[in-house]
Image 1 (tube, helix red, strand yellow):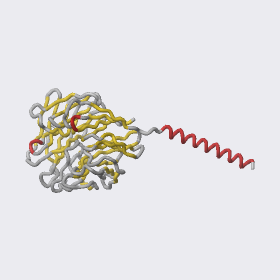
Image 2 (cartoon, rainbow, N blue to C red; image 1 turned 135 degrees about the horizontal axis):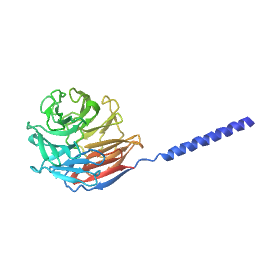
Image 3 (cartoon, rainbow, N blue to C red; image 1 turned 180 degrees about the vertical axis):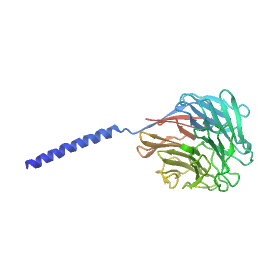
Image 4 (cartoon, rainbow, N blue to C red; image 1 turned 180 degrees about the horizontal axis):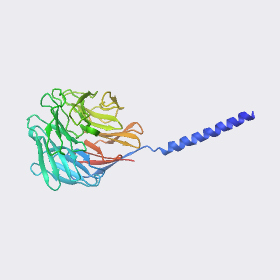
Length: 353
């Protein structure tokens, strides 16, 4: 009997110790809360392109030939405009340095252009579409000065341009994958090209029944084509592709549907071989932009579109609405801070706390 009492007391003491440790660990894990603050970039342009050079310098672009740069993580902005024409739609921008950027103008035919901009030397046009039905959508670079531009198909090949000199010259890739009829992309956020290490790149396609991913592992010399479960249609498909912790993330939808919730957020653990949908979110219609980060060993997926912005909180495995404004584009400037922007020059900073 005495032995049993000792065993019981030992068991009780161990149980109290385990419970105490559990409470300490549980209390130490604080749920991440996204805090949203308004930013005033002092423009009324629709902001479509948004990308950081580092955690302080951020470039943005939009309608009315607008190019902007912040040197303090989006708190203040300097605005540049293209002097020759004030009506171009600068739908994407890629920083080359703290003073220079490649700017993409989207539009049919000759309106599709690529510019090299330097704060000191100004603007230089380095590409102009020579096909009347051509339309370019996005631009992105690897760190070694090689880069890609993707546009809507004008023949049997996907329309992909490449540069090897930090955007000073561009040539079409002759080994691009075969395109479906009318396959292209959406110039809605500058998010449909994703660059990876050692020559890897992914291009998200859409329109006219297509919603595919083009993948290269050798700087665009050869390509694989991967199918996705995203809804397809004349104005449907993929709008954005990102990567985090080995996962590929895609979003998009049918741009003609704005009054219902769509299943339009997927991820792949095997480089696009198989896709899984995230649980249903609350925002109606399609998403145009997406930004992904890994913070405190959890993934956070920020999505935005004409009906608002929403974020997947990986630590809590749930969605949270950030805004119901018309927001087209978003980017993380560090692991816990994002900027998002859209119509009428509106911009917001999102901080994970």
